[in-house]
Image (cartoon, rainbow, N blue to C red; front, side, top):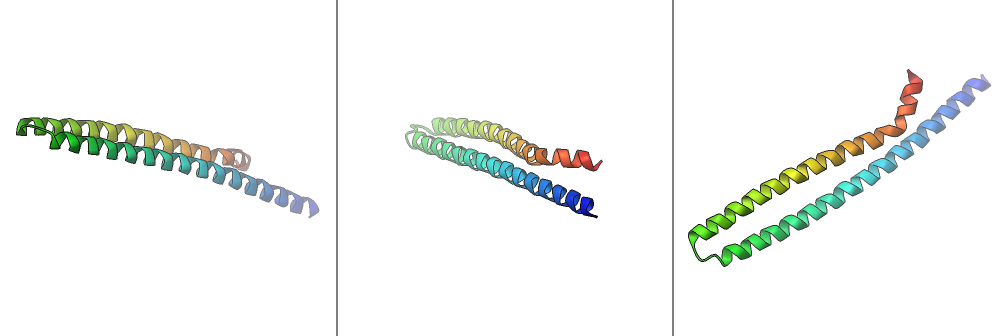
Length: 109
């Protein structure tokens, strides 16, 4: 009976430690995602402001359409690149959060 209690206590402590490690990974990953989102927002705002300034100084309708088209193309390419980066960050977050539990899952099998 004492051995069972000691085993249970040991596994409970191991699970709690693993949960804390996982939580630390989640916090670190969430911080990286938030930082990236902030940087992307800043870059997007700056690009939009620059495009508006160019539009205001355009001398003709054709030039304004060209500026708007270039801005739309750059915005789309930037969005696709950032979406890919966010996907990678979320995948890494999930992988790092699960990593501490791998040993417990392996033991359970």
